[in-house]
Length: 135
Length: 123
Length: 313
Image (cartoon, rainbow over all chains, first blue to last red; front, side, top):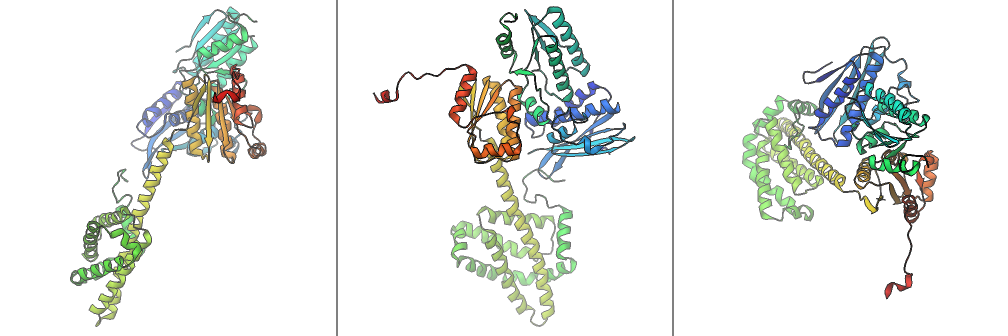
């Protein structure tokens, strides 16, 4: 589901990974995020965008500014129509070391953001939704 | 955009540009391997000060570069990781375990000299 | 859409107002009941207000809030308007805005909620008596009208409480921001060395801020060693321990070694229990050892050139 004010970045190759996080940086520059938090956001986006390229070949990153009471935040949706994740539990296992996980960087991205949701269906695709709020 | 690799007597200094693609990073690894062999370098410094984000791919590649350089008989030091980037890396659980790090090029060179000797010739 | 400004109506939207009225079962019948007693209200407004403030001023606790005659007069006038608005028949967002402002006035003079509620109580009783008098021939109508007034008053109390809460939350938020802005001391100690004394409770927020400042200081001071002194920390939990490990690792990525000094036996035990990888962290028992270790690493030798006894000469 895409809203009118969304920023949609098609992801087809690794150059798009860089584009996605650069566009995100620009988008959040108006929000009250420290430079450190901006880097966390850019890193999380880099991880999920990279997953799209590696596992699905193509997909998109949707960026949206959201509001909750007096605070604003950045909502990121990373979606693809790729093979899907067979074992979501394993993918989200927090081994604290990417070499032990499936290499998806998902537990790490979850730690970088405030809210994180993963939906995936074998053969249909994957959608990661994550949000970071101003403090 | 490719990385620039400078030679300073027996050392090689590679500066990673901020807008390097995955392919560029892989190319860098190859170029450094070739460079170490050609010049019989004893030390390599990889300067990542221009990287604003280090994600799992970048870290894996960097680790790979360090391992390869060491296998070729040279010391490898990664320098220039910015505070924000270091912070995100540990949040993400990405470590450069086993790789020597230093603050910047200056510190990296003095560390290399300590270990290898001023001109790069092994002590 | 919720505006980000500081208007008193904050998050009361049209739908929210409807929700509240529905919940109190305040409907058109109540609106007409209240409109009916509007004339009556105008007649006894002054008397009720006077009684009301006489009551307030007879108690030491509430009297103290109104000893300034200007404040007293202003509040009395506001109270009169308030009273008359109860029966003027239009209970929309403008009405809400008005109620919230009155709540704000009282909150600003720091009137405690219990006194505010006590005032409403006096109010309802004073009005009830007058209503009974006016409706003595139609006690049922009088009762029903009183219930309408009570519903509306509770709507008002809800709004007043919102004002108090919003204001408290705003204060808390401002204080938190002020705390965030407090600089965590990161002290350049010798060339290449930083000293970071940590005192008291560390929550996740502070820990994060501390790490950011520490790493920034490593860059700015070109530090090779950081002595993090936790002598002032009573106990650590797994979150704080995790933060410490993260700080150590992040500093290492920047080429600096972190020495955790002032580790008490209790904290040492906690670290063992939590399974913290002590191989990655250098810890020492007290600050002095920490500094000495740092100096060793940096290649300093400290020699004393004068004995203690010569200090006074």
